[in-house]
Image 1 (cartoon, rainbow, N blue to C red):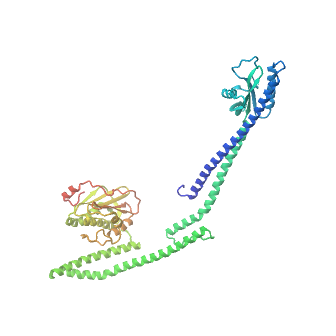
Image 2: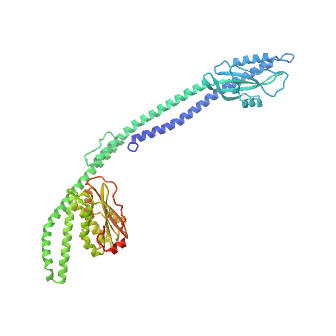
Image 3: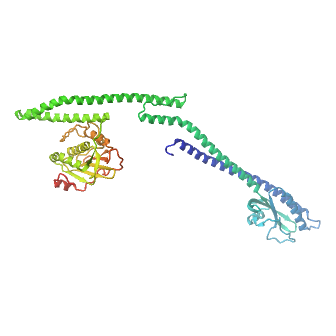
Length: 525
């Protein structure tokens, strides 16, 4: 679905990128809001603490009598009252008045704290900062144990001086649960809004892309139908936007293609009819020429040497002409789609052996040893025996003509689905460019090379058509100077499915070439 659906990919990528963008923006906004809320609350706490510490210091200063003495406990009680009054607003978590350690004074005021406050929340680090810098209000973020659980809090405080009792630290604790609740509400709103925004973006993208690719999908479907041969299919033209321009351009292209295809089809039919008619019409005069040539050939002993050679050349060319007419008729049948297979159950190994027997004498004249290596394929297969024999003969004839007198090995193997035949020679070979042209009609790798098995240049083209008609394929391997290998792979049943060919390309022989050449045997199984 991911590879096939442009709509899915576009919507998914848009939602993903939008989600990343919204997450980054939402995270930044959340951090900014959290920092702003904390700074605002901190400034409020520091200001309130400063006023409270100043008021407490004023109480202690005013408690000194004319004799220079002070009732520290009475002053302490008054200071606690002032602190409680300053913490009357919601969020106040208590206070503490602690004596700074390490002092020796005439009087000592008892350290006090509000009920329920755990003075452990006032860290030694905060107290040390307050003592080092008594002219400022110091604060620290802490966790406060409340009936509802652990809550964030701020502890702030300063230093006051009690006459005759020394230095004391005043700390106020503020519960920030209300600030945390506000921040949680904002963050929840941001998350919900972000999710809703991403979903909305996805829906909008889906709608827009669906509207945009609808005409493209229509064009693709129309192109598929055109490719299947429905040349009358066209795209509906509506409006004057870029999609309408695309539709008009596509339709003009389709009209041009239809016109060209019809023209080429008509020309092809005329060409096929011409080849077929000429091939048929030439048979009558060719038969007459053949009969006359046979008469002259049988009486060639009565002629002079030059006339005898002329008659022999005439018969050779007549035979080649007959082969060419036969091949042209066969190609015209394939071009017209009028070929039908005469199927039977045949043993591929037996077919190959018959072909080797047929071309054995020609191979002997060229000095090539024919070898057969059968690895499988003894069972019968559904084939047109005549056409398969023609393919094998063509492979062997080409191998003999271009094998340079070296051994030629025929391989046969099979598996559950297919049977393969490969003909390997060790002759001149071909270049990659020549391999690409080997199935072209009337093409020859070396036109000047003398052929011993006849040929019209149509053999491999016909062989390829025969293999395709069976549902098989012909593969070629060739390296210049190392020889060539043609491999035919056929399904066991015509039109059946098959996977890999039973034979490699090229297959490695089990018999060494030197031993094979010295053996002089025509067929080695």
